[in-house]
Structure formats: C-alpha cells, structure tokens
Length: 124
Image 1 (cartoon, rainbow, N blue to C red):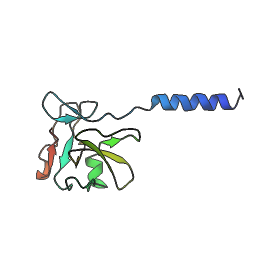
Image 2: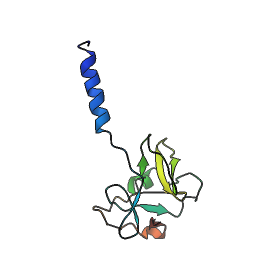
Image 3: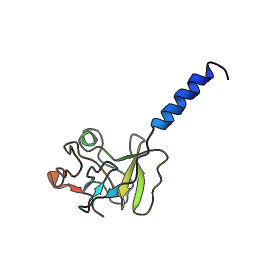
Image 4: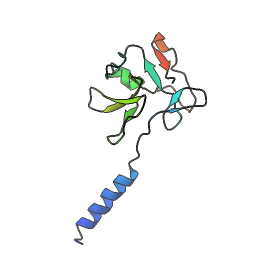
C-alpha cells in the first residue's frame, strides 16, 4: 500500500468510528420525551404544527438548541425529520419540532417548561 494512502485511510476510519448517530427521542420514566442522554425535550407553540418548519432560529435557537438529526437518521412512527433554514435536519414529534433548553444542566431537568407561556415539555 502506498505510504501516503495508509495514514489517510487510518485517519478516515478513525473519524468514521468517532461519529455517533443521534437516536430518535425516547420517553423517560416521567412520561416526557428526552434525547439519548436523558435531557428533556421541548416544543414551541409558535412552530406551525405539521408544517415541517421551525421558526426558532438565530438567538432563539441559541437558547433552545434544535434536536439535530444526523444525515443517516431515519424517521419512524410519530417521529419525523424537518429541514431547518440552515440546512440541518431536526427531529419532530407529531409534526412539532423538538428542542433542548440551555438552562437544563442534567438529565431530568425541566426548567424550560412554561417559559414565556410558549415552551412546553414534549410529551407522547
């Protein structure tokens, strides 16, 4: 094997191995949707249901990070994938885009529930 190709192939393999897939949201013991790390997920009342669109961008998305899907993630059942304005894909549940909240610091936190009367924990 060419001595220049081997390091490139090794590096490519390591990068692929380090890539982790974002799993579809899960339901916690408290009956709320969470990400794969147990962090609470939220829905935004201002997002039009079923429109396949998030209206939370820019500063909004800085505080309410979208639950971003990897390119190889596949929607199933009540879960769908929407395209964001920046071209990334975001998980949605029953047509509502899913978000995290920057002030939640550990699994089980639900400090974003009720913020400004338009943010709510996502529930099945």
